[in-house]
Amino acid sequence: MTFGQILEHAKPYAIGLVVGLFFSPIIGFNAGWLTTTTASNLAAETARVDALTGICSDTAGRMATATSTDLAALQGYANRAKRDELVATIMANIQVPADVAGKVSTSCSRALS
Image (cartoon, rainbow, N blue to C red):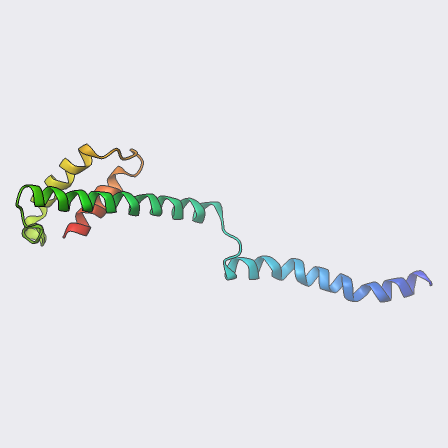
């Protein structure tokens, strides 16, 4: 077998390799098989905020029940100051990491509104 024949037989494999190297990252990212570090970090932070928001909302419900307060009285824009005061009280009792404390308090306030 001569060198020209070897190249002729290897040509489809070389084309497949080049096409595969070009399209595999495109397909991988679009199908969700590959993620970037930023997307992974954002998903982890969102999960932390959502979990802590649930704890805050549950605590607000228990606190309102203990003090015979109706949570419906805290809904709406006019009651925002009362709601923020309640959330601040709850946040003082929950151990929330400093990097997500603002997002958790905002999200908890929105959940109560």
